[in-house]
Structures are given as structure tokens and as C-alpha cells.
Image (cartoon, rainbow, N blue to C red; front, side, top):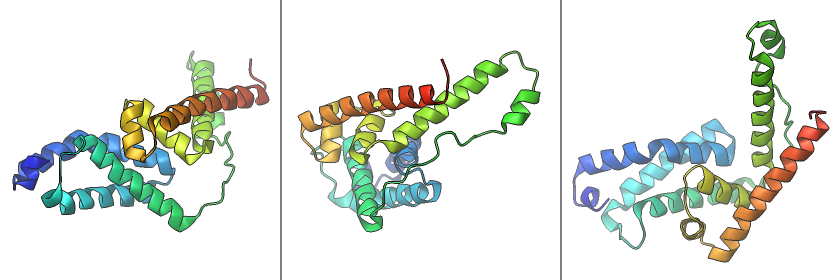
Length: 184
């Protein structure tokens, strides 16, 4: 980032290529809205470009980048003031009749895996925002609790609690919904 701030356009390209996929997935999983995720993703990179001349190395670039992303999500959530909605967890992602017509020997296993993935996605979406963010940054990005605390502007202990509660909430949610779907 310091090289980009000094005028090296190639340095920005390196940063962008390194962080584009994980940052985009962060937005998509946080928001569950493809168009909004794309908008905030682009806005993040615009802010990186605008802030290049004033960038200081007080934190790792990744921490700084995700802090920008975090703030955009928080600003958006405040502007929209969403009402918690309960999404249908069992909404099929594929036509189950077409799956059954398929003679693949692994059909039952694939169907079960799809249902489990759908359950988990639904449970992640139902997590409180602060827990969802901490969980995704930990699992998807591999960030430590200390880095997540810095990104979210929270204490280390609060961040550890968010991660712990997210894991517990997901475990309980998946178990409950799996049992409710009459699976063994």
C-alpha cells in the first residue's frame, strides 16, 4: 500500500488481486444480497484508492481494508434498519425431482450434503450480525480474534465471546433444524 501511495500503480494491482476474492466473499456472506455486496465491494476499493495518499501503517493492510469494509456494512445496516426476518431454511437450491431422476449412485449422499449446506447457510444468516461477522472473518479469512477485534472496534474478550457464541449458536441451530427435518 505504501508503494501504491508513492505512485506505483502496479502495487495496487497486486493488492487488488490478492484481496479481491476473500473481500468479495466477505460482503456476500455478510449481506446475503449479491447486488448490495457488489456495490459495497466497489465502494471499499474506491475508498482505498482515495485514502492512498493518507495511508499510515498503524495496522496491517488487511486489517485496514476489512475495517473499511466493516464500516460500510455497519453504515448500510444503520441506514436500512432491517427487521430480523426468518428466511425459509429448506428452500431448495435445486429441483429435487430432477435429482431423483438422476441414477447417480451418490444421489442420496449429495442430497443430504445439499440439505446440510442449506441448513448451515440458513443458520449463519440467522446469527446476530456481530457474531456472523466474527465467525466469517475467523472461518473464511482465518483471522485471529485479535485482528477481528481491531477490524470491528471491539475488545479482544468481546470478540472471543462473539466467536464462541457463533459456534455454539450454529451447532444448536443445525442440530435443531436437522432433527426438525426428521433426519437421523
